[in-house]
Image 1 (cartoon, rainbow, N blue to C red):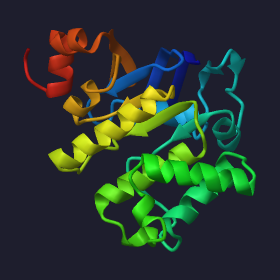
Image 2 (tube, rainbow, N blue to C red):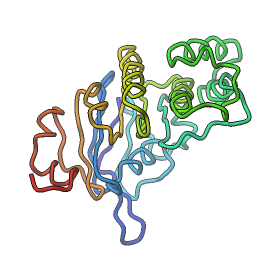
Image 3 (cartoon, rainbow, N blue to C red):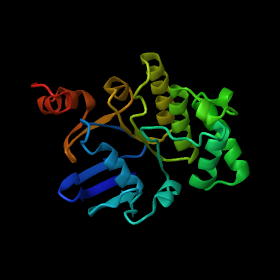
Amino acid sequence: MLELRGVSKAFGAIVVAERIDLALSAGEALGVIGPNGAGKSTLFNLITGMLRPDSGRVILDGLDITDLAPEDRCRAGIGRSFQIPLPFDHLSVFENLSVAALFGGGMGQAEAIQHCGRTLELTGLEAKANRRAGSLPLLDRKRLELARALATRPRTLLLDEIAGGLTEAECQELVETIRTIHAGGVGIIWIEHVVHALLAVVQRLVVLDFGRVVAQGVPAEVMRSSEVQTIYMGVPA
C-alpha cells in the first residue's frame, strides 16, 4: 500500500533520514520506535509531504506521490495525527471533524455529516460533540486528534505518540480504539514511546536511530535484540 524507496533527507550536515526503505502492506499495523532525535517524526513528514526528500521516492498504491502536496496526499488516503494535539479550539468537536471531512476528505456536506457521526461514535466522543475543543481534557484532546485524522477517511493512518501523557487506564482505552480501527481494514504506522501499548497492536516493528533503520521484524524478536536494547534503552544489553 505504502512504500519508501531509498528516502534521504538532511539539513546541512545533519542527516535526519538516510536511505530509508520501508513498506506497509494493506491492512498492516507497523510500529516505529527509537530514541528522541532518531528521525521518527521526520519519517511522517516525508510520508505526508510536509518535507520533500533529497533523494528517494514515496509510493502509494503503486503511484509515485513524491511530488504531491500534503493536501493531495490526504485526499489520496493518508491520514495523520500529531504528537501535540492542536484542534481549532474555538470550534466544537463536531465542527473540527467536519473541517477534516470536508476539506481533508473532500466529501460533500451530507456525506461528511454521516461520516463524522460514525467517527465520533468510534472514538468515544459522541457525548461531547458540541463541546468547544479548547475545553477538553488531555485524553479527549488525544481522541479528537485521532478522530480528525479518521474524518479524512484514510486508508493509511499515521499515529505520532498518541499515547504519550495518558494514564494506564486511559492508554488501555486508546489501545482498544486503535484495535477497532485496524480491524476495520485501515493500515497503521504508529510511532510510540509507550512500548507496551504499541506492542498490543502492531504486527511488525521498525527501529530508527540517527535517521537509519537499524532493525525491523516480528516485535518480540526486535525487542530482544541487544543492539535495540542498547540504542533504545541506553543501557548495555
